[in-house]
Image (cartoon, rainbow, N blue to C red; front, side, top):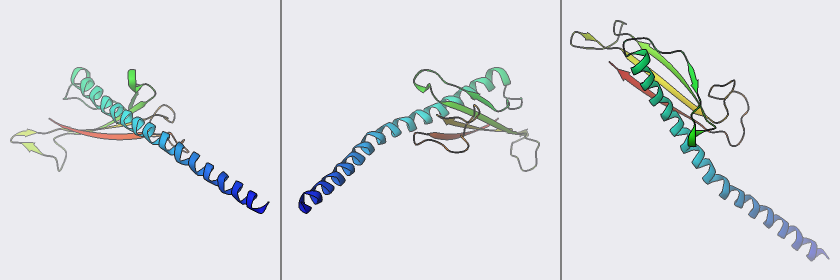
Length: 141
């Protein structure tokens, strides 16, 4: 009787271990895919900002206010929050190209799949499937 109980306990532990390994094998590729989608969402946000700045804001103007966009298609489910800072060429410590003072725009795109109050990154507790990527561009003109 003791041998039977021992074998049952060992088999139950082995079954639990196999179930855990199987779960990890299924979750890892999905996390990798979500990570790649988050990167692409952040990249799309930067591209959108560049288009907006070129067409609407012009490269001589200020940055737009912090803005969140929700891409569609394969990137649906992600939110991208864009923040921008502008350093005019007349500020101390900035660069020039000959007689032309250069202006710097630094844009940060933060993409996540569970935004807090409509913007990324999420604050507070997040789920196991939370993914976030942040990309930064600097534009000089």
